[in-house]
Amino acid sequence: MSDAVLVLNSGSSSIKFGLFDISAAEPTLLCNGLLDEHEAKPRLAVKSPAGEDLFETHKEASEANSGDLFTDVLGFVEDRFGGHRLRAVGHRIVHGGPDYSGPVELTDGVYARLEALTPLAPLHQPRCLEPIRTIAAIRPGLAQIACFDTAFHHSMAPPASRFAIPRRFEARGIRRYGFHGLSFEYVAGRLAEIAPELATRRIVIAHLGNGASLCALRDGRSVDTTMGLTPLDGLVMGTRSGTIDPGLLLYLQQHEKMSGEDVQHLLYHQSGLLGVSGISADMRTLLASHEAAAREAVDLFTLRAAQQVAMMTATLGGLDCLVFTGGIGEHASDIRSAIGERLAWLGVRIDAAANDAGRGRINAGASAVDVFVIPTNEELTIARHCVSVLQATGTVS
Image (cartoon, rainbow, N blue to C red; front, side, top):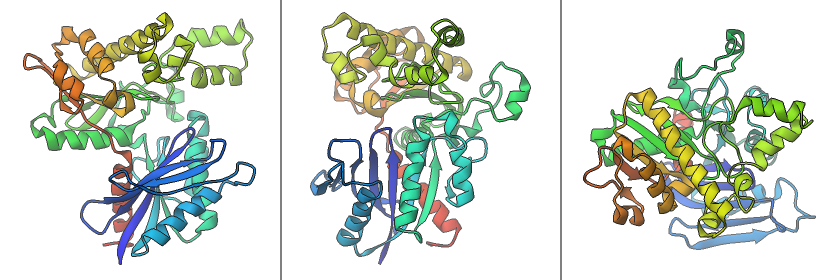
């Protein structure tokens, strides 16, 4: 009988998942899917690695509870892949704080420490933690493993990790943590496979999606990133503001009389592409629109992205390679082209035909910077981390 792990990647409105065979040196995807509890009829959809439909079920919203769809996931795994022994469930956890620089098996104590970090990621942390309690209730003997978006950035050191506020706050863990680490870890590994000569060079990875951030890498390690204490900082995002004047927040509270909760909702849910365009948070919708406000939102997105690539370049002391990933980074050739044009002064030249193809190396021959599009795979990264934890505990060999 082969061993397997189930990976859950929780977003703000749905959960992506994948089942991986871990009997070989590299985890192999058996199936993947989507678990959505926020539709009119919450649903579970499962596909094969080739994209074939394997299973789908819907629940009446009035009848569903938080464990129904997870029960269906586990039931499907046991029925369809009965020749595999499910060893663990791996979870993407957005914030690991100062304590967790690698994956860890979840216990009540670990869960409590992660729950205490909710104020640092109020939109994401509860969604990441909710499935843990649910699965513990329906499969109490099943191991669960936390894998952290912040862990990859633990190599980041002062001054890049520091805020210019009194040092007593840094002693309490108030520092720049960074996020999207599971994605950056995967993409850095793929780049080392595709172009090993670049692995130790000065690299910026642009994870561009509804959430977006950049990571500066030297020798394959994170040395700077655009997100900070929370996932609000840095680039313009779908509904998040990115970097903003802190004086504006004081103004909103003191003169617009907005509460802290109102400001939080504004910055997380009503800003970014949605706030500027007044149309949509979806880049595809904005690129297809003829409205001036849509073009203005896209222009701001690409300007801020280029500005912050330059910021990462300053940390690195130069730029040898730029990598695009994430939903926008992988699929929006117009956005890659616009960012590349804004970075022409750095020697970035993107080949139009290669950019339209949207995979692998896309820089022109005259480019001083190598430019790639590399699809990310956070679920595979989580599966690899689960294997390392299970091996360390002797659960699998």
